[in-house]
Image (cartoon, rainbow, N blue to C red; front, side, top):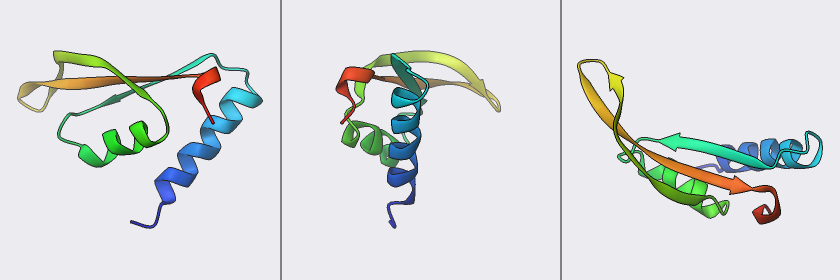
Length: 75
């Protein structure tokens, strides 16, 4: 609740897009992780879709939401 992740991610993205000249950044988030999905959307990431049962976690498969942000979309 102290906006540490928001500020940290914003700084990382700024560095990646301006200094490393990245074109695209991707993120995978478990659908149950509402805070992470909300943070990505706040930073203008686009939800591209859900990869169903794509990863084995402990004793079962889990879904992952797939987000992306393009250089020209970062503000």
